[in-house]
Image 1 (cartoon, rainbow, N blue to C red):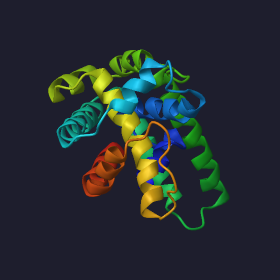
Image 2 (image 1 turned 45 degrees about the vertical axis):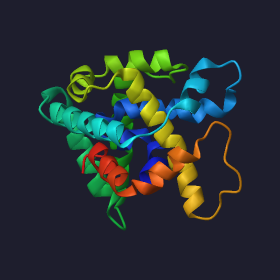
Image 3 (image 1 turned 90 degrees about the vertical axis):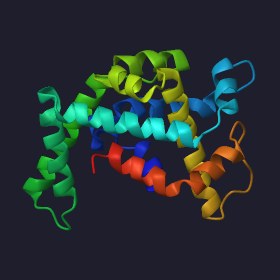
Image 4 (image 1 turned 30 degrees about the horizontal axis):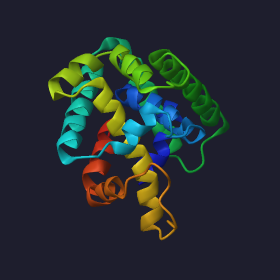
Length: 206
């Protein structure tokens, strides 16, 4: 479940292939401030169910988008910076110069991520649809997988939410199912842990 937690933090450590998911993660963090009562978006999300068919489509999106970005000269510098940052972070005892370089790379990657998703959190599913559609190469990736921007948004939001709860359940820390969370979705995450880990690796550029 590590990638779900990483998805919610330090967004600049990820390749552009998951920039759309990053903006979804920011919105997911804001969800507890909203209530399902009278909120059509949260009602729609509460009724949403993760399926293997949609998971396979999201995998196609990740692969197609990642390949498109790798072939796009505009983003090669970003991916090179991310690769350099990962190598520096893997060192047990970085030198002061390396620590300074890591900080510079983190700032560079964060700025590019902000530029990609337009900054700020999407407050509604309609906002997320618009942001996802505006992502570089994303419309083509979604079309190839035959998945709509709204479906992609709902799948990722639900996956993040269910992933956290699944992690708690596996650790024996789940005392009560949070409002709006489906145990069916939680069990889906547990049952498909291997496939989801592979999806996380694809999204993280490995």
